[in-house]
Length: 296
Image 1 (cartoon, rainbow, N blue to C red):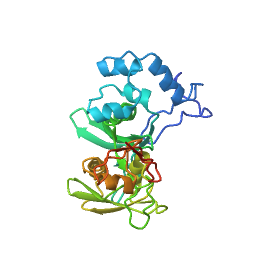
Image 2: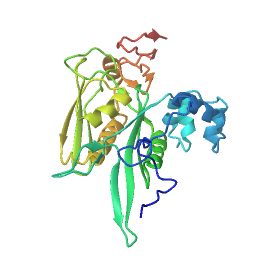
Image 3: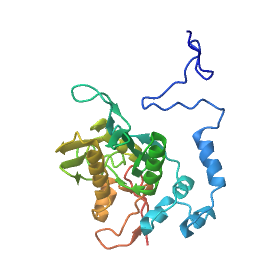
């Protein structure tokens, strides 16, 4: 007896919908606008839920550094979207299944729970956002599917945004431009220790690929990196990098060092402070390190 085909069974000539590496159907192009226009439309429909969000919506706050300098907590990602134009990237913190130690690196780290009903998988990912001008943020997201995990990580990365110091602390360069970091910093997470050392102009980012993504979005172009510990754990490796970047804002600098190193906090140039003679001066340090000084 010949078997009858199901009415909903696909034909041999029909092309199946393409699937990603994680078994999800890829969305077909539906003529939607790019991401930038989607964010602008979402900001138009944004209804703030906090006092800080209402001030940003009413154009009472124009710069993100006004919020970060006061230590105010950001609870709405739309605040960051309205003040900055950010770029985002997924970090390769996962690994696909394979023989003899696993396969290629993946942006999603998959774990699963054994139950009586079967395996319940979960996906985790890490997103880095930044404007390549002194502001960067990292976020970790975990969910039962890949898309919600990615969206959760993007939201947390925007809420965790912070600013860093840039400058030229390399004795080989001493150009005074903010292409590197002004001094050596060290970060730690678990057994991993990471040290950032200022490098001369043109050297590039001498570090691991995922750490280079974080530094590039932070606005650092040249740096040497020294590590120790179990750096194969990329999640702790990224957290150690974040800790080292936080240390850039913790060190106090002398006025003469600010002028000599061309220090920039975030995207704002650091103003010149009173000089050694005690004479009050006011001015702004240019990226080249030359200060336009005006004495009273």
